[in-house]
Amino acid sequence: MSKDKKQHTANEPEREAEKPVEEAAETPAEETEQEAPAEETEQEAPAEETAKQPDALAELQKKLDEANDRLLRTAAEYDNFRRRSQKEKEAIYTDSKAEIIGKLLPVIDNFERAAAADADAENYKKGIEMTVKQLLDALTAMGVEAYGAAGDAFDPNIHNGVMHVDDETLGENVVTDVFIKGYKVGDKVIRHASVRVAN
Image 1 (cartoon, rainbow, N blue to C red):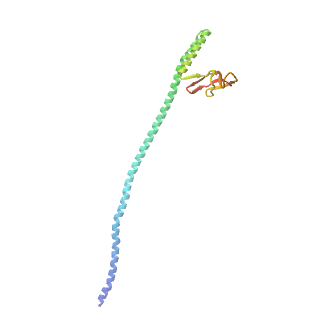
Image 2 (cartoon, rainbow, N blue to C red; image 1 turned 90 degrees about the vertical axis):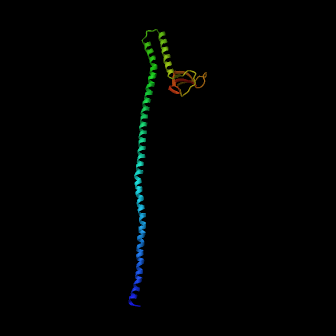
Image 3 (cartoon, helix red, strand yellow; image 1 turned 30 degrees about the vertical axis):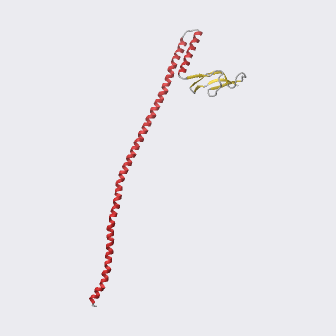
């Protein structure tokens, strides 16, 4: 074997050893090229999400503004209702007082006439009785009821027992005398009747 052939044969393994290194160097480059599109896709996805976020925020802000507007309108309506109710309540109270006074004014007129008139005792008494009847009629027209009479059963809810007497001829807790009549409207007591109670 000649010297040149030996050198050629000796160099061949070196070349063959170099080939895998080149192939190995080429393989990662190909893999890198294949992975590159995946990275681009990952970068595009967050960009889309970022683009959607302002729209979602704007929609939420719009809903918040609408809810805020509804709340302000409701508060304003309630405030108007409260003021209107207060005015109506005051008007009812004033109207009620005016109605009561209007019904009592004729009675006052009669008392003034009786005080100014020159009359004997009998006519004067008769005039007072008529005026008192007129007053009681006016109270009855307003739903006011007078109560309290001898013989009634004593009721602590409507009577005020100021005196007590033992009387075997009467039953237990019976009103014997009425010192001041009681008045009520429906079930509401305006003034309790002051009475004497037996047994």
